[in-house]
Amino acid sequence: MPGRRFPALLSSFSPQLPDVLHTQFGSFLAFYVIVALAGVSLLWLGGEWRRRRQSARERRHSVHCRLCHHHFRDASHDALVRCPACDVLNERRLPLEI
Image 1 (spheres, rainbow, N blue to C red):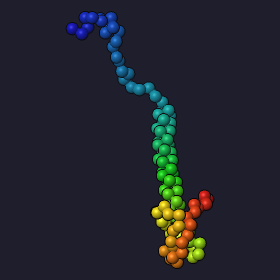
Image 2 (cartoon, rainbow, N blue to C red):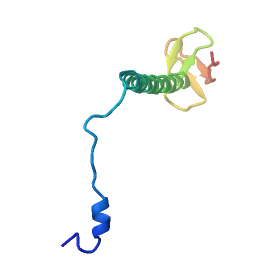
Image 3 (tube, rainbow, N blue to C red):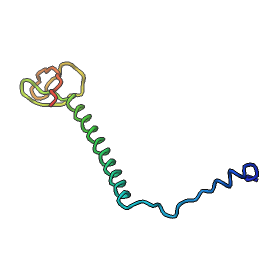
Image 4 (cartoon, one colour):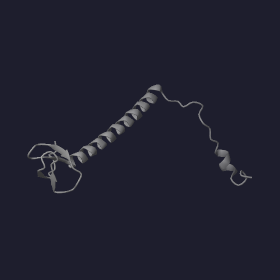
């Protein structure tokens, strides 16, 4: 039998759950408002972080022709890139951070 070895331990251990959780409505509401604001803030920060990474990736592949001022994207890693509009070779330079 399970109660024979430790009768004192089993008799003192009698879990009783309260009938009702005694919390005030104001603290209950404040807790859920804080949790909701934290969730929205985390979603906003994650979206902002993803947008900045995407913007940096687009700027890295963006090229501006020095002759005809045509903007185009080139995913190659070549130092010299040929403009599709005027067929001039352009040096790849990192754009200025705004």
